Image (cartoon, rainbow, N blue to C red):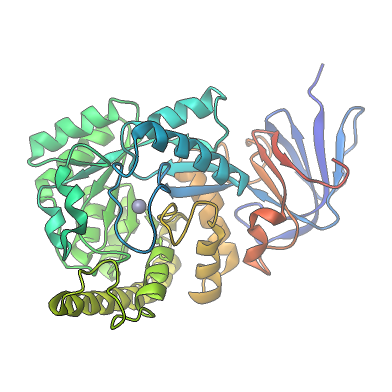
Length: 437
Ligand SMILES: [Zn+2]
């Protein structure tokens, strides 16, 4: 007895790698793709026939910078007390909701990017057990930081960074301590270690420094790799990106201020880059349009000298953004493996608004929609170590698929949730709003 099949016909096929092909047919049997063909497949009794009438069939996407339990914050652009803003049981419920949201937005895979209280590991297990609906999930550790990072912030709003070991962050100093922390954090079941390697990004200007010593960085990366795990780094300085790539950091988050030498080192290491530029855009939209005379931006205390610091900070963020927006296309052209994902869960970019990031890249920063879709599908699956299993539409691969009402290569906005007519994860419908369903 063979499984009933799903037979998609007349698809605009975006396979995750090549330009779109019209009039294509894809058969799904069980959890996998059985065939991809121009010729109509021979139907079998019991097949579910899905004539797509030119609608798009594409791989499920991967959210590569997923803060599972972000979203319990207040308003505006003040830094939240990460991991301490609500009780851990509440944050874990939020993580379950966010995971479901991501899946229903077409993200069939996700990689965590720092998580407190072991929430990411629990989320991954809960998804695997079917307790919670969510993407194929890779769990992240707390964010390992070096002592004194909070001094980079110009006011007292980030006091929580000094609490060190209680929330999302964990203070580590010295190569031996980095080895120990890496083992201890990964030993709880995470797949990737998050480290904070430099200041900068989003709402804080870059400075050309590293937080970790080279020995600390290499101790962390070598330990993680020995265990078969990955390292991802918040890094937004030229020297930081360069050192992280040279040390073999697997995921370079943000990568503000990268230059040609960095791009070469990233290519050499085969690291993935998460440009994550939406948060910066959102911050600047608010900060540059703020009436600073009327009241202080929540990142400042409102004293004259604080206001000057704030305005200087905003100018610094703008300059970093303009520079990085010029360099990212060079990195992309050079063949750097880009992936999508950003700090969703902050008030100005709630979970569920993921397509805003893709829209930014295509409509404002000039990347081709096909490239951005490749980042979200093929590259994302490779990042999850699922390159042979998912990310493209090919016979034998897992049927992680989206049916899109429209052509995202013409308008990337068709990837918004309302236009997703079907979402399949491993051949099973997560969402089925196909005509005649
Ligand atoms: Zn982040």
